Image 1: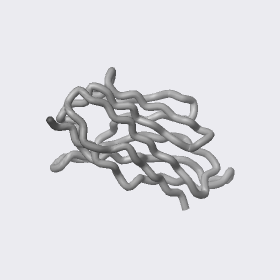
Image 2: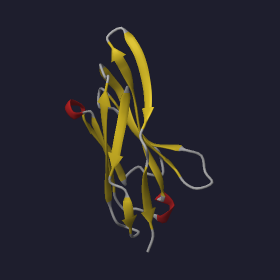
Image 3: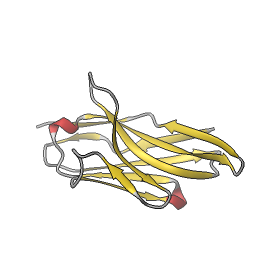
Image 4: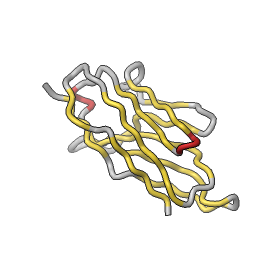
Length: 121
């Protein structure tokens, strides 16, 4: 079993900042990617940012320059630093991780419980 626990959401004013954290635990041999997705009411879940084992990142165009994804592989933890927040960033943010349970395979693709980010004055 692999599970994710995420935290850091809350209510902030436009222009404010939040830092999200997500830690993976369980039967983990290796983690290939960790990332963040978000889903606003009435909209489909969308990619925010991902980071792979080599430290390469990919992020959505509408968050580039404002959000930064980082990781601590020794702690199986990924972070999302969100600056210059806008009302349109309001959503439930979900952590995701993909990897292998053993050295012989056993892939996993696991989602966190979600944390609500509300940007409003």
